[in-house]
Length: 228
Image (cartoon, rainbow, N blue to C red; front, side):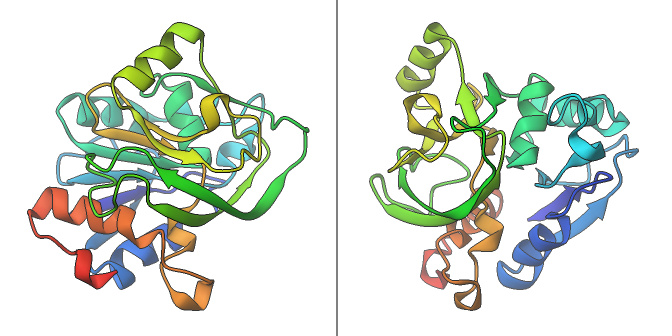
């Protein structure tokens, strides 16, 4: 697997994400600039957490206009795998690559803590190394992680199996306890919890490693479950 992490001005999880993919999961991973206009060299493109362009106006609202986003849309339309984490999730919804939107947390507070998740769909490119119903603990760190979608969109997400991760104890008010969703074709995932911060025992747990192992399995066809 060859992956790229888009490093926007204000991103602060780009190096963490590259480390998780390269040093821990053992795949190639480049940091790329938001001015890049060709992503065809990659199997997976990752949009990291942080505060892209200071998150002025609304989280992800400026980053969506970066030159790389036109290339990312073409990449996703061609079937390339895209994952957006935290601010990356916000950017993907702002760009229309994922349905719904991320609002201020229910209590209008920034939340930084480990949370319990349940795997809802283990048949995606991002979750195939987990089991349906498996319980995970991953950290969150966001002020605008409250997922919203209209009733019709929510019904479609549930019917199509697009909800991949769900909060066990909803920390932010997200509708249907949604922590991570895909697009309809299943090659784009957005999630608020940070899997890259849970890939080593030194960090407090390894529950996030399965996300990256799933992508390796998907792109290389090698079952890597035993490494977790």
